[in-house]
Amino acid sequence: METADISLRPPRHRVSRTAIWFWALRAAAGWLVLIALQVVWTIGDGGNLTLHVTGLVVTAVLGLAHVIVMPWWRYTVHRWEATPDAVYTQSGWLRQEWRIAPVSRIQTVDTERGPLEQLFGLSNVTVTTASAAGPIKVHGLDRATAQRLVDELTANTQATRGDAT
Image (cartoon, rainbow, N blue to C red; front, side, top):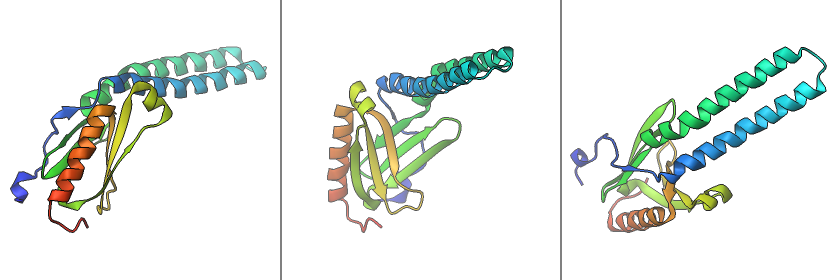
């Protein structure tokens, strides 16, 4: 394998479009908890109602903007690709990261699905290497794509000579 073949470049594949709805629902749940806590505080506190309502409105506007913008932004940024030589990922929301892992360095390939991800038919693939930067993660793949990726990486890893360290 030549190192010229492995270079930093944008990966080719996007995650599943369903991930947009998953990310939006997960973000909305967090904002709803915050709004509920503010409502309880407003009801329980005999203080300045105008200040409490203003805080609730600001929280609702920020939450709505986050729930609408963030999932689309992540979908636009998050990409992945696996070749016989390497795994490429690009991820991030405000801080973006591009990662490359040569197949010869792969130690394990794992798939995980939380309860909400199962509901949306999504899976996450984690590629563990000996890198100090930690594992490479591909979030938001549909189940069939995740399984094909795991099968492909497993086959490529077994066919590649290397010490995986």
